[in-house]
Length: 232
Image 1 (spheres, helix red, strand yellow):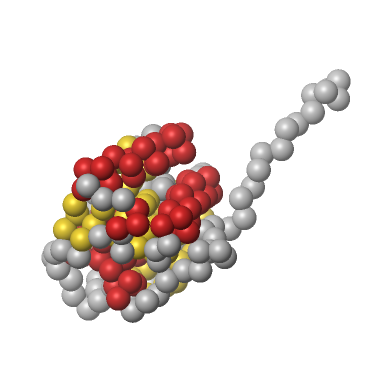
Image 2 (cartoon, rainbow, N blue to C red; image 1 turned 90 degrees about the horizontal axis):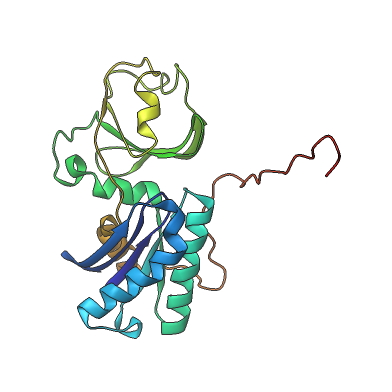
């Protein structure tokens, strides 16, 4: 089994996965509780399956892009488990695990050579992180950060349908004027990491536990305290 961890968004999620199914899953959707909940969830699903960390084949973690704090928590816990249990560490791009979890893609619904899939993560204000994949799951446009505006995605020919999903997608609905687009409901989950985690495990696309870092995509900007008129 592979332990899968997802904390890149407002969802804190941990799953135990075998090749063909999810064995156990715990998740909550309060982004302020990732640090408190993640290790509790992992302990619960390991106990449910009756195994210890050393019994795992590997630990996989959503490596970004996404929330700076969330990614740091998830990657830190994953690295700690991998090091302590002497098991491989796998990093999965957040946008790719989203694609694998989209029902219409995984079920093959409406998948034709012209359809493109765009998982999109909220990056505050009108900013998003996104990537675009073709119907085979291959990269059409690499992971990027963008500010959403009226002409966003106008460079992609309109005969190609664009399917948007993820917590950043609603920003487009009333703004982007491009034709031939659709929106699908989607909630991220560590269980969606099952297939890509085993794909990476089989080809030994593993991370160096000592040096692995989250893929933040852009620098975290800390809010600076503004002094008042008295200089305090």
